[in-house]
Amino acid sequence: MRWLGQLDVFPKFDTKFEQDARQRTAVGGIFSLISLLIIAVLVIGEVRYFFSTVEQHEMYVDPDLGGTMEITVNITFPRVPCDLITADAIDAFGTFAEGVERDTVKSRVAASTLEKISEARPLVDEKKKITKALDPSGAEKENCPSCYGAEPEPGACCHTCEDVRRAYSLRRWVFNEDDISVEQCAEERLRKAATLSSQGGAICLLITKLHG
Image (tube, rainbow, N blue to C red; front, side):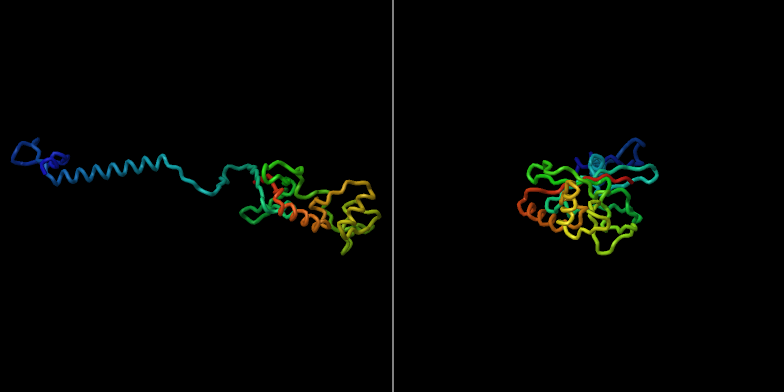
């Protein structure tokens, strides 16, 4: 126990001797070792905490900064056809963001190389938002799908994809049944998308910009 007493950094003073006389004890050495061990553990813990990285899966935007921030979203859907994909953005207050459809494009890409198979096209064609034909007075006609500007005569209806294709052909316009805004061709697009998906030849890439 004599060597343990040599470690005592808190020696007792004996009043029988001079004031600088010190008495080292084994108990004092034990307390010294415990103190040094606690200090070492605390120092190592603080050093590890200082150099450690904390990973948080969330994004915080400081509302006091003001202005707007542009967020670019680039998502690949390996098993969802492009014709089934749409996009909406809602803020924390439940308000729908404006302009999402206008700033969103999607394109088919090869599953193996991610090279584009088709050119990027907008989510919705602004020129083809009318889904009902209009009569000569300008009112919408019930149960009369629009021909999207290719009506052979005012108030004409296009009930099927073939009707729209025929109307475009009469006007010598280029018709694309893959255009998602042509509602009458939805079944044709889904059948084509299902065939491509089963073959594993194409996946969908969606890119959009959000402002908030």
